[in-house]
Length: 318
Image 1 (cartoon, one colour):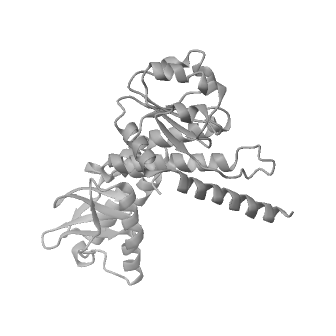
Image 2 (tube, rainbow, N blue to C red):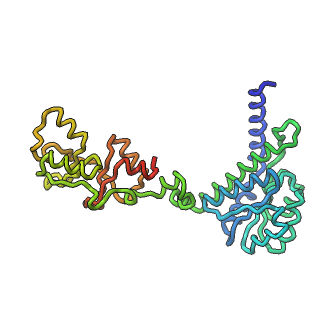
Image 3 (tube, rainbow, N blue to C red):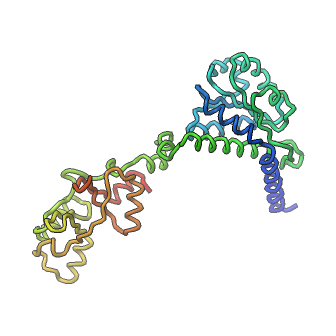
């Protein structure tokens, strides 16, 4: 069999597994699992052995980043002391393809003694784990993509998708927003994009190039050169704010403009502006749409700063 035929066969088998799970998970069981986790006063403890454990780690990470406090506990380590990390008020989500994992079954009496709600994800409704669980989420009957039927393939895919579905349902139930998501992702580019406001990186105070409308073009050029933002803000009694860029000045030079003329005669009278609490990523989109490299930053009608494209680049906003 050619590689591409194997590829298509594996995908088809795993799609069939997802379809089986789609029809096996009941609304009652899924809703009860979500309600139990939402009402939990502690954390969601996820456990699983082998490949189920690897999937469990991913589910725990997804839960934690989307508003559901969760962490993974290895069942083997739990039996040798790590059970101390599980306390009253927690909810346990145990994953086992067969439902008869020895490592997890050892933990069941302790989970019951602590009176912790137990949610199971298994393929076998008749296994011990599903039988003892308060809520049994059953994947359904399907083939593994492994031709020997040995390596967990379809079952791990179905379990991961079920974990994603639980996480998204909980996210929506909690009203979890992008700003909440950013708080758990502050270090990466995504966190920067969601957490950084214009006020965090704009130039302000003496860093802002400012002239008045009666300033000569040549003197405005000196202000642009000194402040090194590629532009200057123009305070003008008639128009309020204007702007002149070094690119504008270069174009004026090509037409032999009298550089002693007041800047008000050549400035742009409708500068592109933004506000201090605008997300830096939104400001970048404005720059791209308007094809400008700087934005005047206002607080109401008051000039408070200038945001330059290079500041966004240096801050890692893209």
